[in-house]
Length: 284
Image (cartoon, rainbow, N blue to C red; front, side, top):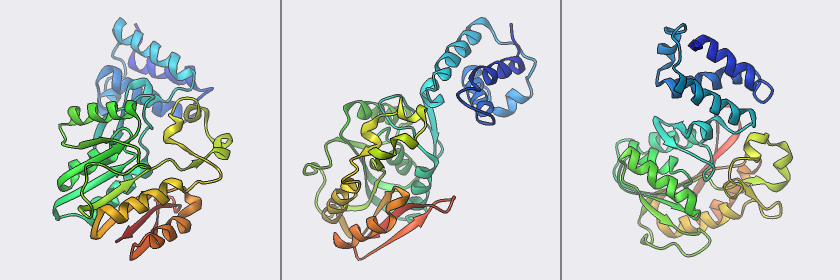
């Protein structure tokens, strides 16, 4: 039987054509943490410990999927997001670090406030709505999603995390049901924003495995979700309520102008940790 050290090397060598270093090493670490139920520190202290046959088979199966460039989060069935370990599969987009930055901005700007009412639109796995439910003193958090498959994943995550979110399986382009006008303090959304023409720039592990419904917008109308959600926000937010978008970095100023045109009194573009326009926030 192979040791942890030998297994890590096996994983790295097996997937290096699809995932060059240092990514291959990081993926090997995630696989071993998941299969062996050990932390990074525990693994480093047990390099000569041997895997049992069942564990070796789990690693082998994971490697076969990784060799086909399937994202490691789907292979393991879990993704870490803002302190939560969430279930993910091909029905939902894998949560990104940029989206954690959006959540962090909302949490910081509403720290200490109680009784908040929050809506996350295009909620997918539920990552934003669940992270806000866990970190805000909210009276009610809603998560809206059109995909039945994604909604099943979000509901499962809510049960696993024991967080109260009211799920709305609706199309944002239809009238929103179940929320009173001008009753919300916060709306967040990470809608589809990748143009169809940008497919050629995307990695195969994203393009071939993640749901296109959650990724792409028509080239001729890339701001359609922002325009509609700005309209929805103007109708559902209280006076002084705030809307937060994750955006395609190309469209910061255009999305800011959409909010002002929809009746928001102020709007600004916020850059991410890499200095890219990534969030637009507006106040009604």
